[in-house]
Length: 313
Image (cartoon, rainbow, N blue to C red):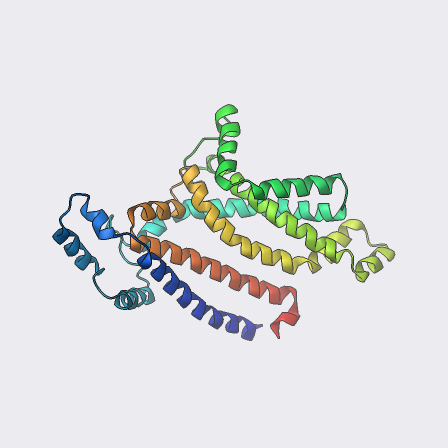
């Protein structure tokens, strides 16, 4: 197991390097000049050229990349062009709302999604199965921002149960924190539940057709034990796979949700940086998101080996 984990960790290093190169090239090859944005609409060409020299944008792109990678190796994500603050500091300042949104979404949606998927598989073809599948199709088909505005209209404006927008830290109290996170987490959670419930149903349904399930039923194993210990456990690998893949959906969805609900998170920081062409902030945030996704996939690979020992060899 230790050798397997070590191999997977080593295999992620080239992936991170390719991700860093891709992020750098995509930003520097797209149209737009942050020096011109900083200088203003009526700036002279000499002023723009002076700002480009100060930012190092007049250097060849390979030198800019080497300089950026060198700083990354010592933990320096660069400095914001507009706020003059370190990018790492800006990300840390905005980290709590994003982590809170992701944590509440996962903790609230995963149990519901897995339970709904297992129940739908156990009652395949019945009313419960049809309701779960209808919810899965609708939940995954609706755009996140449309779903968010619908929830705001119902629960915040019409019924006034929760605040429309804003973030309250958990340090201010659990109940105010949950009220501020209710609508954003529900918006992301509905999409997440729809996706995980659908793959859970398909995986459990496939396992229920195996011979060992019929043998367990013949031995008198009760239905709950059959579903949880035998069916769900053997269907765990594809479910865990989809949970890992859905992290990308969670990261991209958080950018939209933070904008809809005015959450001062990392996703909102990225949106503001894109509008200002703040290259260091965009590179830093995208790189952090990419590293999180790669590390989540590493954890998923390790869970594979724990769930199915054959994968280790």
